[in-house]
Length: 124
Image (cartoon, rainbow, N blue to C red):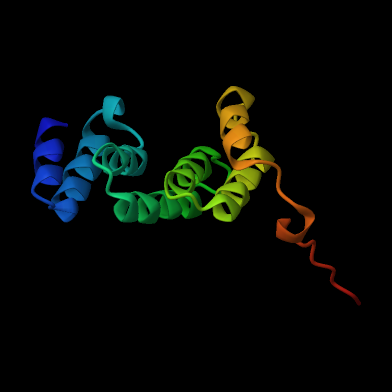
């Protein structure tokens, strides 16, 4: 992790990815490398890297609410309330921990009907 942090400081995200992906193959302690990369990006306020990484994680693990929670936090940090609500809706639908999601919902507010995901209907 120290090496990964040093790489973050000099902007070498490709090296961070390689180090943490390799570490995950060597030790259970470094599992979930994409989550670690995203969290490092958040720590260093690299929101673009964090968003991309969490979106990648959400695609790789479609039942995991954590990347959606992190993307909600990023959207809130950037005062993008509609996007934050969409991410939070997804996290809650996936069973995100209410202890974590409730404070985010308090910041983001309820999703108004016009922002809610529309249900698709397939007709025969």
